[in-house]
Length: 326
Ligand code: F6P
Image (cartoon, rainbow, N blue to C red; front, side):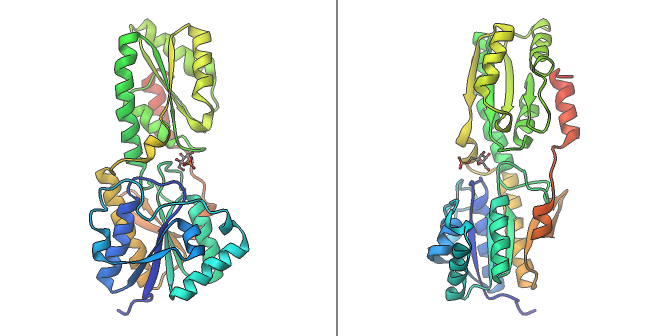
C-alpha cells in the first residue's frame, strides 16, 4: 500500500528520559524500512522554529539503543508558547516539505504537538518521561531505568545507614506524581513512602512505621519522599525532632534521568517508534501511542491530554501493608 506520508520530522522535547534515543532509532529505522524520508530536528520546538535540522538514515541511528540522554537534544521553548512561534515552526515544516511530525516527550510535548496539528500538520506523540504520568498509557519510556537508577543508589545508602544506625530520607523525582517514588519504595523495602496523591499524616505515616521497625529490632530506616510532596530536608528535620534519630538527606535529582536504558525501556521505545511511523504511513494522524498491558494502543491527542492518571492504588496498598505504614 502507498505510504500516506513521504517525509517526516522527529524530535525530543521536555525533560529527557533513558530510551528516548531508542525511540528515535525506532522511528528512523521504520521510516527507512517503509521508504519514508526522516529529518531529525534538534532541540525540540526551539529547533523547529529555527530550522535546526539534519537528514537521518539507517546508519545515523547506529548504537543508539543503549545510549542515555537524547542525541537530538531537548529544550523547553518559551518562543513556541506564543502563536508567532507556532507559525514559525509551521514555516519550517512547509520549507522542508514535512508531512508529519513525531514528538517524543511528556504532556508539554503533546500540548505542543496539538498546537502544530492545529497549524495543519499531522502529528504523533510518543510518551517519554521518567515520571510515568501520562494518562493514556500505563508506561512511559524511561520509567524503568529511572527506578533502577534510584534503587541502585538507595541500596548503597542503606549500607552506610546500617553501619551508622541512621535514618535516610531520599527525595525522588516525579514532578507532581508519586509513581516513581512508590515503585522505588516497594522495590527497596522502604520504611515509608510519601507521595503527593495521598495526604501525609506525619505521626501515622512516618513516625509510627519508624517506631514499629525499631521495636522489631531495626536500627536504620529508609524514608522515600516524592518531590511533589515537598522538601526531603523538611521531612528529615521533623523526623529528627520526633524520634531524635540521626538523619541524612539525599536528593537523587537528575542522576535519575541518565544512564543506559534497561531492556524494558529499549524494547518499549523501539515498539512505540515503530507504531508511530506505521500509523502515519497508514494515514492516521494526531494520535498518542500508549501501552496497555502487553498491547500498543493509540489515542486521539486531545482525548489523551484530557485523561487523568492516578496512582496504582493496588500497589500503594501493598506498599503500605508491607512497609509497616498500615
Ligand atoms: O519530567 C521529568 C522531570 O525530571 C521531573 O521529574 C522533574 O520535576 C523535572 O523533570 C525537572 O526538570 P528540569 O530538568 O527542567 O530541572
